[in-house]
Amino acid sequence: MRVVLVHGIFDTGSKFKTLKPYLEDRGHVCLAPSLTPNDGRNGLPALAEQLGQRIDAAFGAEASFALVGFSMGGLISRWYLQELGGHARVDRFAAIAAPMQGTLWAYGYPGKGAKQMRPGSDFLARLGESVQTLDRMELFAYWTPFDAVIVPQDSADWQLADSTRIPALCHPCMLWHPTLMSHLAAQLAAD
Image (cartoon, rainbow, N blue to C red; front, side, top):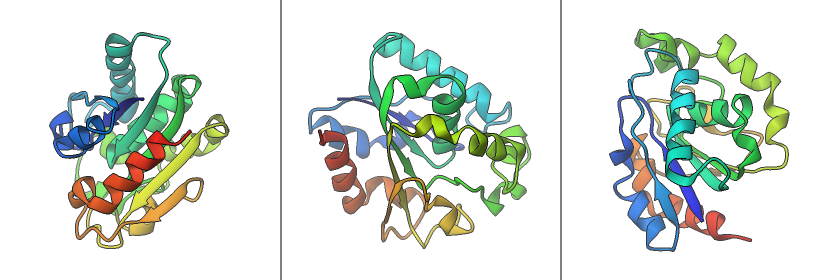
């Protein structure tokens, strides 16, 4: 299966240096684009548009794929799915430590994208209004109670998804936690 991995704030596609080869060893074809500017200063919709362009360039405009978003990448992915028509091509979406209801951490950084990740933002409200576009999709969420970036931590415990608590000791640790990697690989391989 084709899998697109979407990084979070201040990251690049290299953030998936453990998860990407793990999935590729299990037969998946992975794309992990680096979106810029990676601090989201121009807003998450702009990064979602860039994501769509990178996907089309790599896989073509019609190919189906699974989408995995880490942290801010989970919200970028949702905008792509819900507002840019990506839902027509994706049947599985996994959010890893993504602030689905926002994060208080976003108050500590300037820029449009950080404001969009704040609890109660217009951006999150709009995603809430168009959530029905995800109805036919399998949704997975992974979160840790030890997350110091997603505050409160249960913001990543997405109620619409099959949500799994991972005992990772930090936010980035999620991406190389063995339980997460094996569970995600199994979900992506399921028929």
